[in-house]
Length: 339
Image (cartoon, rainbow, N blue to C red; front, top):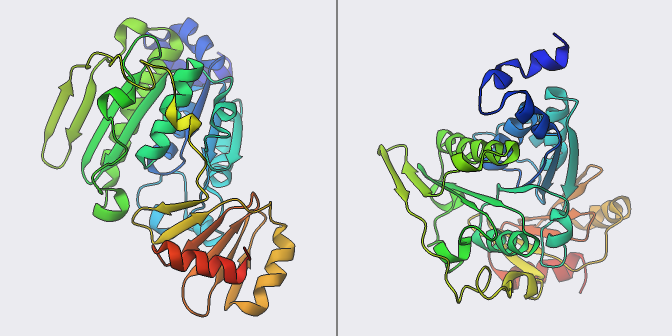
């Protein structure tokens, strides 16, 4: 038995996968959007299973508050403020060097969503907000790519599989992007529910990649691990007037890109639209005007004397941290970055 055969031997022994299924996994390509709690578990499962190509997309960096539930990161990653896609790649390539990892340190927007998903067999949802999920939903249905949704907050989790041309889309189940104000940053989350949701997503991904369509779960799964509840909701019929799978207008792809985005519960506001930053030059610019400046090859963190922090990314994004007031965020941005 070769080393490669030994690596996947227990998985190949599982009859629904077998040698043929393992070969299909090796030729598969999945995109994971959001490398937080769900995304790190999803990536670990896909890489360990031997999926041939795994694209990792995330806009954020590792902080100490992530370590409780985001399984691929450690204290060194947080101390260095490494982008999550960089820290993930560092860990994953040590797990399975045969898998091709494609890291994308960027925000998913209406302008780039379709190109970021191009060539993928599946898109796995590791995001934490419905605005981005609706964007992924519309991009997937426009391109004919299955989208495996997952969400976790508190001790509750949800998961569903959306297949263009076969199932209703996310908009048919959840017509509004208003999640009721509950996020991991406002009501918390426990780590086990994250693992469970991502594992449900991962097994559906494996089913799809090996071609076992008959075993696909067709229900919306909802559960609460703390209160010992589990429900499976039968799929609703696709709505003829659904702007995505019915009318095929894909509104999230057509909306104007927002230059200002409040990150719910984090006292952080992202401002986009600046030209790409030369980080070395901007570190020198900010040093005299701020309390401290810390930089790595991917971003700059500048602590402000009046409180708060600016985080500059090479692609032109800026996080204003320490406020959820757009007016104050714009004021600090104008003061330190310019108009």
